[in-house]
Image (cartoon, rainbow, N blue to C red; front, side):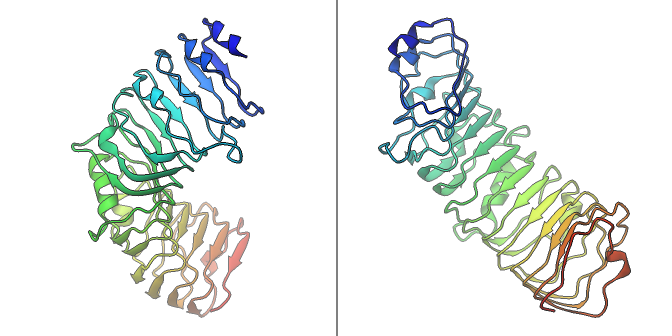
Length: 331
């Protein structure tokens, strides 16, 4: 009801997972509000009346609109001046247009605008990069990531930009290289399903998770596990990576998927003591089935080597007490 705006002492309004279809404009009168959550509702539109909510630190409106009944939605501009806002979630609402400058959100730590219809560049210059820890712009139609000038050693720990239209503009590995240069402490990079190309550059020691599936990369760094010794997950499915696989000595790697590339040659014995899942399927690898050195934890659950040219016997040290899936078909 419109009288909702009279509750001026409210600090938090949490209405997720209901069937709310309308929020009155009087919500803009709740000047002491700190947190507002409208996730998973059926709003016809997102009210753009937040400019007076100067205490607001968290605003979440994830999948909060009814796509079937709503018109095209724009980014709520009244949010852009809220200098205390730390968490902003607007994913899943088919918001159109470009990502506006967010320089007024000086304390922003987390921004999620995934699964909208946003276009153009993601201009990281327009973010207060020294505070941003989590950025998700995935599943839009962004074409470029514009990194800021300078180095921000404590920012952008998690960056997800998968399923966009990003490209390197003819400069090999430019997007990843520019991200690493500006944010050397990055831990998660999800860039799958774009049009990135060239060679994957040297990775930072902070990196834990790299997903570059379904791009056009040509190679991985030979010193992968030396420069990124803490990496836990690496997936590069469906690229154009060719040549042989470098000897992998990765003490913390749990997931490795290099399937659907153009890898050739034999595979050296690997030292992956905590590997749980690995796939090298749909390549042109040959020789003996690779064994594992120092697999002492018995963590291997899934191994897929199908549709290669392996021959010979299955190595004894491949056997793991937890192994659930072993796929050697098509060799």
